[in-house]
Image (cartoon, rainbow, N blue to C red; front, side, top):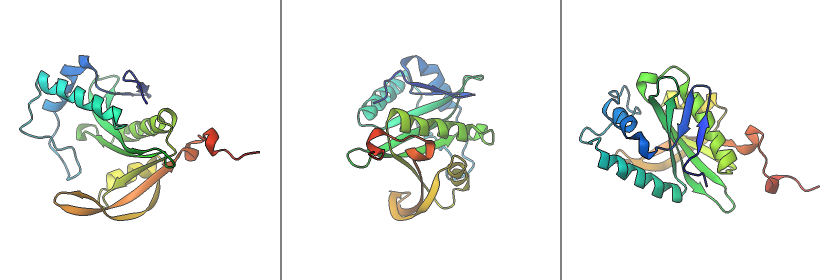
Amino acid sequence: MIPSTFIKKTKRLEIRFYRPSDYELWKQTKENTPKPRNRWDVNPDPNFKATKSNFLKTLREEKIQRKAERYFFIAIDKKSKKIVGHAIVYDIRRSIFQSGGVGYGIYNHSWGQGYGRELVLAVLDIGFTKLKLHRIEAAIEKGNRRSIGLAKSVGMVREGLRRGFVFFENQWKDLLIFSMLSEDRGIVYPSLKKKP
């Protein structure tokens, strides 16, 4: 389990959980999220209020989620000190599986600058080295070309189509599955190594 103080730093990003001291950063992000530019873009709730009590509620909910092995990360540009995106590691299955899913989003004011690739590579590293997962997959709608391109750019492999995989927007959706194994990143756990 990742400690709440966990931080992953890349060339331009600091990737971590929200902290109690992040209220102003969180509020600024909530109040200044750009309007969506496509149907997969971040779509903020217009009725949501960025109050201190809602921030503290968010912290409590994320702490509960981490106990259930669902990890939400923010990506902060180290230079501007602004949140440019987020990622989540979720649906972790232990036992004989040691697998999980990854989701990601970059705010559209930061598109086209390579933040997505930098963020996803870092979160895959967290999944394989800190969470000790063997397999991580991304489930993506067929028309979401940006997300598909990002998955391919970090080395995830397209496996196929899962029919009726999730229910949202009032219907069952087919999703493309992209995956990566720990071995693809050169990480082989002792239990997976061949015996001499």
